[in-house]
Length: 119
Ligand code: HEM
Image (tube, rainbow, N blue to C red; front, side, top):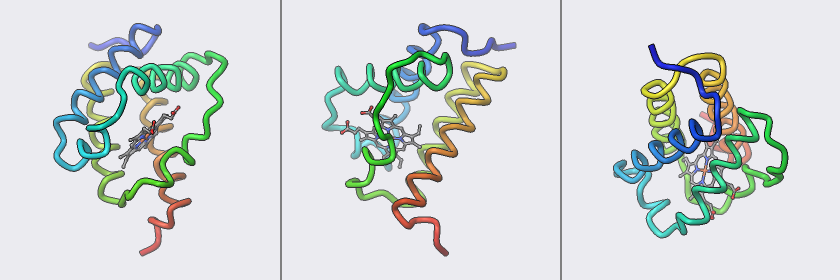
């Protein structure tokens, strides 16, 4: 039985494992290959500590960060399947569920803003 997400260290592991999987995904890797990881990973960890551990201080508009990217419904599906898979491999419990729900809802919000949800 796996444990739930409880600490900042648990989030470190979640984010590190997720992005290592992203870099092995043919469809997602191109969006991340030129990223400054020293900046991106700490930002993602701060974001997930804000969502899951109620840590104050994350103020970015996540949707806006994605609007300039050339994304599709299929890419969001790939991202979300990989994220859910990563969470399920590592954790189970209320916060693990919350992580998957929030990622799904944020993904839908971005897609809606990009008009990707029609047809
Ligand atoms: C097709 C799917 C997605 C792709 C290809 C993608 C790609 C990216 C990239 C390349 C960045 C870095 C932007 C930069 O710093 O210039 C980023 C940032 C970010 N993404 Fe996504 N993303 C996707 C979906 C999602 C989803 C579903 C979530 C929901 C949790 C999410 C949450 C974030 C957050 C929190 C940041 C950091 C914003 C910041 O504080 O700088 N992304 N994404």
